[in-house]
Image 1 (cartoon, one colour):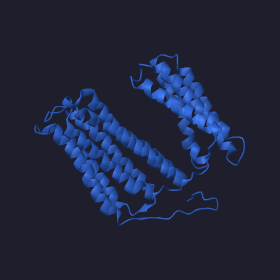
Image 2: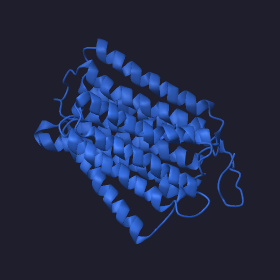
Image 3: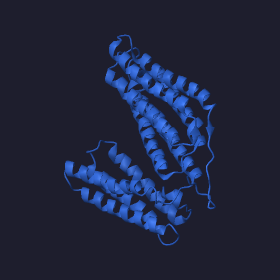
Image 4: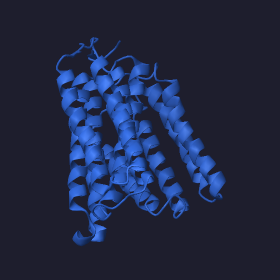
Length: 324
């Protein structure tokens, strides 16, 4: 969001970005062992990461009509830094409370001031979130590949791996055929919903990958617990729910057929869990194949429904920024 509102390409900005990438990697490494294994390390790294974002806003608060917004965000991220740093030596429960408080300090002002915050450039916003969605889909492939690598070729179900690729590809296709072209509403509250729905979308994609990664290590035709089927169905339903919300705050109209298809996909993945619970013959292949089939059929039907829609034009002011 900072890069969208305060575009900059200087050596100083790149150095801050380099530090941020390193700190993100450290947080990921520390968290990979579990939420409590490296809690102090994670808290320190996240405090430093938050501080680096405060620095980016502080660097943008010296001049220009948006300096008061940048100054306020720098202060808010600075307070969050203090909260995360103070959480470092605390026991588990107080530490978690401090972490949540730090996140609230960062997130709640964004929601409270979404109307008065400086506008964002739509093209850059769409491009960045499309790139992030590509990364999430790539992470889904990586997660399954890592699960397969840890068990060796003889210990994985290659057909399940192939079906997982089909499943993620269908989601990728549905997103990129719709969301970038449909744009985002220029109304601040609706645009905030558009941003939040992408968080739900990305969590769904990653959660689905984690669930499917278990399937590739099952024996062929193995009877699988219903909980493992639900571990794929729930995040996949989250993906379709997120796409519904994103469409509702986009400029594409009419949406009736597309929303109906996405709701139908959510119902279908729920029925897969029901069948897995009651059908003895519903094994590994059936589970992953059904999820992939739902995604492929949905993508194909939605492509036909999308052909009968239009994307409404966006009004632009003299500065090129979108407004309602």
